[in-house]
Image (cartoon, rainbow, N blue to C red; front, top):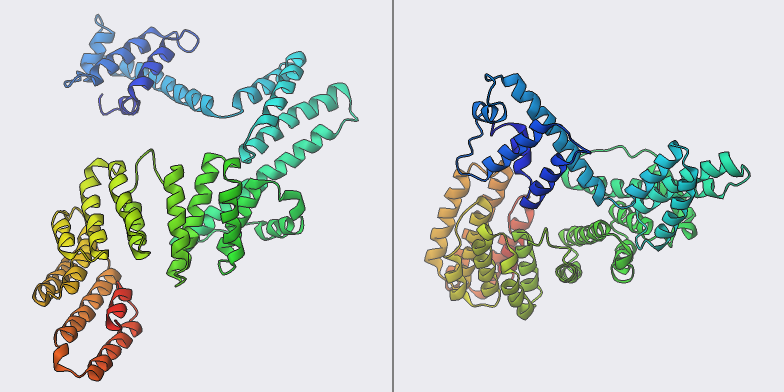
Length: 479
């Protein structure tokens, strides 16, 4: 029984939620079936013990001590409790939603012809909505539903000539649709760019044309402007005006957005900078660095209070690249505690090594790298590449050539890297070996001859399609 869906579902609940579920099941309004209450108590006690005792015959005997074992009878009680669980989590979710309770009260009052209640609660809810600070899609959808109910009530039961409520219904429905259309098209356009997927966006071109031609009608709706700008930044990524508008919203209108919209804005602005950096626009590194700082300050970069180790790595690398060494060192130390515990030491030691390498503290970098464990392919590859650069900076040719050969064998034998990745790394190692030998034998060449050979190597690197860490090879060839 411990492997049943019911027990697995209950296991997912926190201690507080389990107590709430018990109260829910014991409530006579929701449940009057005694055996489901007893079954839940048995399960909760079992989950609290090392030996759960949740074998079906044992549970059945506790529920029905005087009856011979009947699996179908036990299954029926489990089924009743599972339905209560579904109802419990749906009510929990309902209670977390803004606007749902007053809207459903109005809809119920209308259906039951309780028009006094309808008008009284309708006026109160209209005032509540007017004070609501965020005008996102949920806000417009709530306004649509409110004006749908009240508009049709007044039109049918009081004054048929009144049309303002119904016009507000249509206006709010339009804004709800526009926001949802733009938001989803933004996310799916980004998905297409990243994963080479394809979606058909019906009416999108017509909608964008309409918004552009009626901008004065929507320019005060921050959420519409947000998703319109995000989508246009993806469709017209060479136009910097869209990114400038995103930055303006980040600075001037950030507090007008819901937390979800703040995260969407932050994520898309981040991704836009990454796209431009990958296209060779290095000036966007500073923009991305400022976004990372804002994400840390606002907490938007965190996921349930934890910092992703790869974001930790990206921020460290960017800070070092921009020579923001004091800030970066403080960041590495300050945010270590927010990393996932079982990945924390590895991430910390790797990024500390990166910092030491960037500040030319090469022996300290080697000491930190020795503490990094190869828990996965990414750590192995990243650590080896950093170790290679450190040996190169120390001019330790023997250690460097040995590492290149060891790394080459690892890449060829590794089953978790694709053929393209293997080719990218083997090309890098091939060119790295040539670079190391040229630099090692520099004393045997004239200055001009060495320069020519390095330039020939740089041209070969540029002409080769798949080379991991190409930028470092070219930088060293032309140093």
